[in-house]
Image (tube, rainbow, N blue to C red):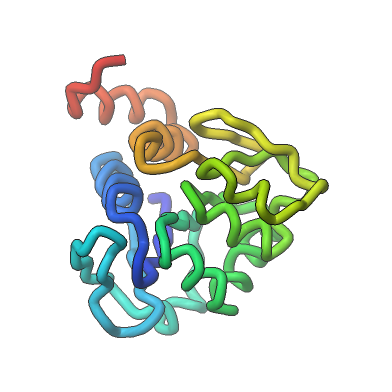
Length: 184
């Protein structure tokens, strides 16, 4: 069974976090949510999320994918945590899936993971970094090898379903999408 880590930082975007967690779990993926500390997470719109574990407790576990929700100040909080930078760079070196949505591709860029890659993000996020080594895309979901990025809350469902397809196949994606009664 595929195993996915979703780090939850204070101020993360709840639509992005919960949509990814929910859709992946509907597909039978083992999703572990990890708080940067042992506190409940107050998301960007005030929703309280209770992570499964504290990040420190799972740093030595193996995951097939890491997914960073965006939002502010969640993205900045992820950027300031050296453990997150180490996780994304280590997983990229191991050719594991490294994924981020909304403002969170900034975390990947700052860690050097987007160098020489195509990526999308919330409008203006990557542009503000002034990095000529990142090829900017305006796609809802951008795949460049095992680096997957997406634009924002409105693309969270597309992003989550793409992650399902990558981890457990197109048929499972179609089954999950059908059960969601999603017009496609």
